[in-house]
View (cartoon, rainbow, N blue to C red):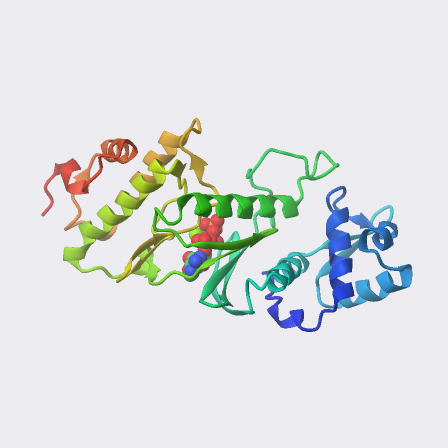
Length: 306
Ligand SMILES: Nc1ncnc2c1ncn2[C@@H]1O[C@H](COP(=O)(O)OP(=O)(O)OP(=O)(O)O)[C@@H](O)[C@H]1O
Ligand SMILES: [Mg+2]
């Protein structure tokens, strides 16, 4: 579990951030940054580095490991602190509030601003390296892809996807992006998995979601992780969120991924509302979505179940 660093932000001084940035800079080249590099990287004297390291270690913002040399690494908390500091300097946020969701690969908090925002810290690469990207330009050590890079890349992808899709598709509005963190508007409603839909609303909601999936395809994107956990339902409408793994429609597997998205979604509706959702040919639904011809799943029913 990565701790919420919002509480320590007020205790940190500008020189603490110089030190954290110095460690971050060193992590481009090695997993554990040699302590001797830190005065140069951070623009601090050796004594100042010692004092700042001590303060940052106490707050779990950096870790030490002695291999052939004394090395330091940012923790996710340290990386979070750097991103929060940047958002605060840009006046993108005024404060961090309650958790909105904790996933395997992210922590999401409410953030205060001129309107309620959601702050998502990506955690990809934390426990084990997932194949987010094969590029290896971030570390000099070819056998090691830094979690820093993996998480930052995922945030970048999610932010880019939101920028492409908003406002034509019902996604959170992207507000700001730094390092492994993105800021977006907070959506209304509850996850589809926990929503209690009335029988007469069910097919309409499924059609509404598939219509947005079609809109995203038209804008050039396939979500590629669509499920009842990545859609929110409110009386004001639906929102499709969690886009870091999305792919462009000209990607070799785009149509296969679209078919999987459609089949996941329809499968969930069939399981949860078997009496009102007809059995459909999901391949045909996906093709109609891709061709911009989708109107309702009713048109694809293979049998009448109600
Ligand atoms: N813009 C938002 N507004 C309100 N709540 C949000 C927002 N974005 C995310 N959340 C909450 O945080 C939870 C996790 O977010 P998200 O699905 O984006 O990440 P994740 O599931 O951890 O990612 P992964 O699927 O890669 O594990 C969501 O289920 C939702 O409850
Ligand atoms: Mg999710």
